[in-house]
Length: 234
Image (cartoon, rainbow, N blue to C red):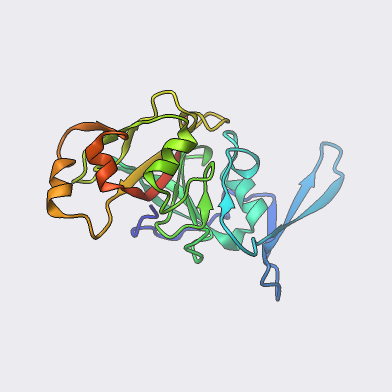
């Protein structure tokens, strides 16, 4: 979830040696990046990176390419255009904050919030969070994915924390299923949400400091869906 307490900072210090130009007049592009490099012999070169904006449908997130475990803020700015990246204090699930970046902050459907294992240098992602209106998916999982579809994607039932409170509905354990290992050292994090029409009695049966199996009859009766999700890097 993108924090509401982000303060925009400059990436200039991070982007030394990297010049980026916004793409003008093309609504189908996120921007054009120009990477300037000088080798040990003084030879100079420029590489232009143009990233097309997806035209329709959800966008599949993978822990590769610009989001690989060894990526950096500079790499992401080069790929997506510096105008589409801001830095700020990123909030962790425990309430603490650390320097991170917001990618595409003006497009809620595509915006990503990235926290780093090395926040001082902004290298090696620790967590990527998506907005509550995101068009991204992870292994086919997106906002609104049903309980049964989540089990199907995982290949087996999993365990959910009882509803209520900040961590209510969070998947506590994929129990060795596919969503616990996305490749690239990544694990999917999910918080399930109850429908607005769920009765008080239904909510009471699955609330509190208890962990439930996703195939528990009370959980199935409530039929929660994915309310928010994120990716953690090991």
